[in-house]
Length: 366
Image (tube, rainbow, N blue to C red; front, side, top):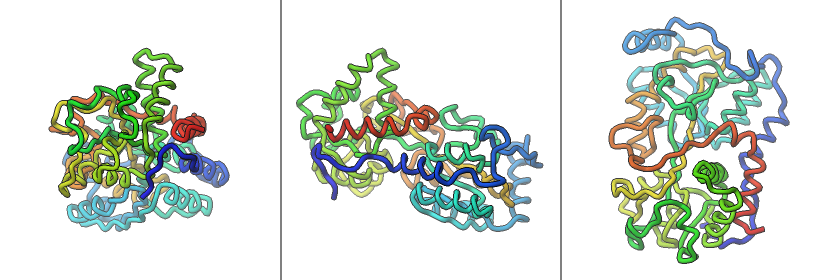
């Protein structure tokens, strides 16, 4: 258990450490992008096809290619891979680890001129580094076309939404006792009753942008967030934070994942984020897990088929079983009615170190 009350601790620098790793490794020989990080764009027989015709072309080619290898930072990637294999009969080998470890492996293999995977799945903020290095291949489909601009870049496509919500303990609060938006948590009445997660720099950056877009002055935003932080306990890890919420250690977790709340609810825990009540605290910050075909893969059809599967209804069904959010809202979307704002990946990556320093100062008070 890691529950802290505004005491000093290490900076939220995991993502920054990844950026340093990318810089330290340099650009591997022979893997530079075609144009400033743009993915390669070799034409494929299935390009321009859609629906059943595209699926058939991909299946036929994927079966000729053979086994597929996926490197993923998504904990439940094996469930997606198993469902894919069950449908198409193509075996998928999954390497699963945290994002920093996965991307370090990709960079090391690239430096050694060895391509070990066909598909990469990681947070979009980390995929940006792979895109800059020219390690990602091209992928096009009607599913990708349907994604919002915040959910795709030249080298990657969002395959899953991760939504930060204000989860609350239903044994302590009713939905109508929650503020309409996060500014309400600056009220002293929330002192000691709310929790912030120590590494949520992407949530913090997007929350600032939300209030900036609504005309709040930067100094006023800083003051508001400072008062919120002064009221907050700090937890390390979203799963731990959600479990502490269920245990009644605080009334509200300000940036818990919807999937953490959903899984606890399935186990009978007294937690919610307001789904279906008409009262979800605004804004809901969304960031994406992203997928990419690796540049130079010998299995381009299998890789494209795998992304099609993740982005389509079959992948959405797997996500829903896992309580994760599919990349595109479906009928009865858990976030329906909420004011949703997407993380600006490019801006976040450009200012990551500055944002991490600001957030660390905010939650430690030093």
